[in-house]
Every structure is written in structure tokens, then in C-alpha cells.
Length: 118
Length: 108
Image (tube, rainbow over all chains, first blue to last red; front, side):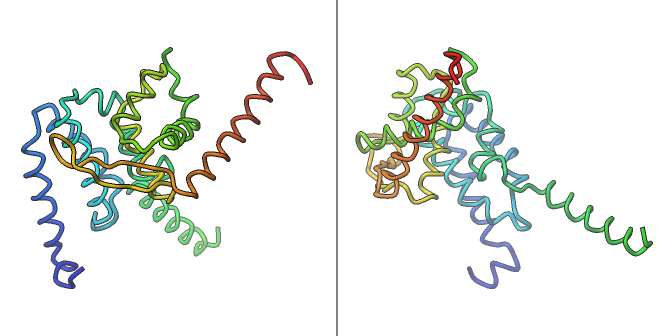
């Protein structure tokens, strides 16, 4: 990755724009599913969200392939889009923003308690 | 049969390995095969997530082939590590089912 991209996030903007162009070519119900997938994947992002790019790319690829096959989006994702996204992001054990925040908070509280001699 | 999700969770990966082991195939065909077997709840997204995991764990060979319409399809075949994993899966399956059968029959 270029240094310039690292600090500006330009590559991310570019990738996201490319994804949206691809998503725009999908049928309406697939576009709705894409929005939902993005929502559910967001919590699995790292600080910059770069780790999500290949995952989003794969998910979009799946939508494109199956839309071309003429499948209904329900046949592809079923009822549990959240579960699907968790599986994509590396399973139930995948660390989310919330886990990291929690850890940090716990660490801070423990440190302050220690300082108080608790 | 409904509501098999919880029970299937650990075994679906083995099923997919077996299907790929029989012949090189792609996601949609795997889903259809599982549906035909009677696992109606299995959708393509589930299979996709499993395939991704198999790929990440280095158990499959992946080849992109053009399809009639739309983007190229990914075809999957087992590699050596995949075949070993499949054998392990069946050994575990054998172990679990034999114990559970024994439990049902009331033996010790």
C-alpha cells in the first residue's frame, strides 16, 4: 500500500466507490441486501476498516454471481444476514468494535482501581 | 425437517468437504445438493461462508472458470490437506454417532 493512501484513506474511498458502482448494477432486492450486509459487517472493521475490503468484495461477488443466476436474494442469504456476516468476518469469535472498546474500558477501570489501592 | 441449524453447525463443513471430494464443483451446485439431501434451510450464503473458511484453511484448490452468464465462477476441489480433513471428519462422526446410538439404546 502506498504511504499516501495509508494516511489519506484514498484507497478506501476508491474501493468503496467501485463497490457502489458494482452494487448499483444489481437488482433492487439485491441492492437492499447489500446495504444490510454492509451494516452488519461494519462492527467487524478494524480501526481503518481496511480488513473489510476483501470481505465486502467477496460478499458482493456472491451477490453478483447469484443475481446473474436469477436466484431470489432469500435463496442466497436466507433469514439470518447477521449470522452470514459473522461467518464471513471469521465466525462468532470475531472481535468487533464493541469487544475492543470493552477491553479498553476494563483495562482503564482496573488501572484506576489499582492506583486507588483497591 | 425444520430447525436443524444448531445441530448441523459442526457437521455442515464436513458435508461440504465430502461433496467437493466427490467431484470438483461450485457453490450453487453444493447448495442444491444439500437441499436435495433434505437440508432445506441451507442457503447459498451459508455454503459461501464455509467455502471461504475451507479456502482460508488451505483445504481446497480453487479455479476460476467462466460461466455462461455473469462473472466467472469459482470451482473447488480437495487438495491433500482437504482429503485428510475429510477423513478426520468421518472418524469424528463415527465416534460421536456410535456413542450417541449407544446412549439411546441404554447401553453402557
